[in-house]
Image 1: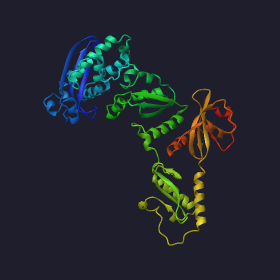
Image 2: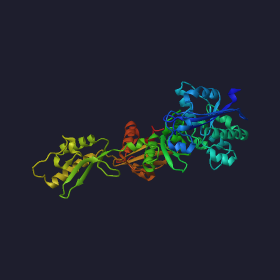
Image 3: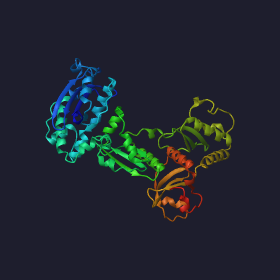
Image 4: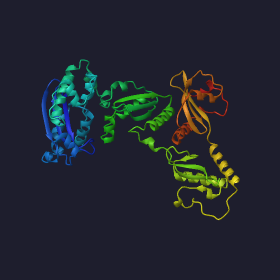
Length: 469
């Protein structure tokens, strides 16, 4: 009855991820759900050095495994013992990733059902202070010998598994073993109810560490589907394994549409700076166009690097974009090149050359600078991006004022508003940025019917939303 049997596995390794590390010891206990049928264990020569911290934890060093078989030599035995049986381990994805990866390297294709005793214990014995193997064994009075050695940990996991099978009066293990069970794909420390609460709607979701600190913020058109995608697949990268291991909770904030989810995600990342968010941290502009007045009263225009929290007239992703814009302004308004600074002298053609000509009239020159800056501001409009709300009784608004993101929020669908500027009363303020304005501008360009200029006194009525639902 091999189909009803379980292979309880524990391994020791040279490191934390299967791509760069190797197995140094493996133990397999065959179980029929009631009792142990067979056991097997062996040291494994990893064919790479064992780091000192691993030796300190496990007691396994290079000398101990020097004459042990390589995984290639034991792969057939490992595969034969695992094939057709449910793979069981404490924090199953860690052990599974190593065994699957090294079997694949030896040419074995293997896709078992998996069972995590961490998740099973959380379901069957909720409320315990910790679900690490050592702490569980203490809480449940399970003998644990040779801690952090494959044989000792596998033996303790087998006893834990036997007790969980005995205590499982609700059939939780059977449910977890179903191929389609989402619970089996969840990170080991994540309460299933956190996932079950997720809606299939647009919004922002937050992953939390053990210390209740936000470690990742994401946005989604369908929150539940997007969160589930984080837990699918069999990537063995250390980054992904550490990411899943660090997730202890999820919360979410529902939004009316994708744009508001994007804006909220960006704001939260900039505010919380989560450990695992990297992409949005690169999207802020690197250069800016500045205007300043020297001691002699003359105003200058300059392009240079944009430090954090530094104000600039206009921001640019690339330095040459700022240089081109400054050169066009200088030509259009006949600004003396001595008052235009292009950042890097080695740039050559854009660097103003010394001249012995007399300086221009102060008032005339400064007036030209003001005109040039006014031209840049002409495109900085004020408008509201109006859309449907989170439900039928409300509408949503993204508010832009003088070319900057002012805030966003929701208002009742039957609200009486004589002028769109009154919508500011309903919005929550948010910080604007170059990246945020690029997002809003792209959505405004794709949905011009949802954009209502603030400068025009447009009353709010049903006609403004005729195409939004």
